[in-house]
Image 1 (spheres, rainbow, N blue to C red):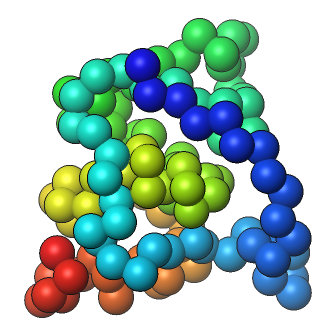
Image 2 (spheres, helix red, strand yellow; image 1 turned 180 degrees about the vertical axis):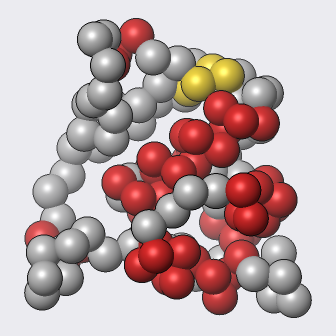
Image 3 (cartoon, one colour; image 1 turned 180 degrees about the horizontal axis):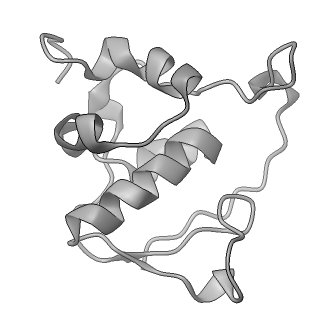
Length: 118
């Protein structure tokens, strides 16, 4: 099972309006997340529902993988993103993802079609 445990508070991830800044790696090649297996998230990333610690994401399921990516891109550290998100798969899922505008804007140069980084 894939998990991330780093519980680092980094004040630099907050902008002046106290909105979380989107963290983006230098290239899609840094995103080496698996496409199979089961993942769980620490409470700092996922705390919904009656028992959030028991929630698992089946990474072989495209929709569950998309859901996990949405959470991690919005709330994760750069380390979380690099461990849990797969670069080529992110490009494939991009148009179907529900992301806040500032996250989509930050990631678009890396993910949008025509980018040689993919």
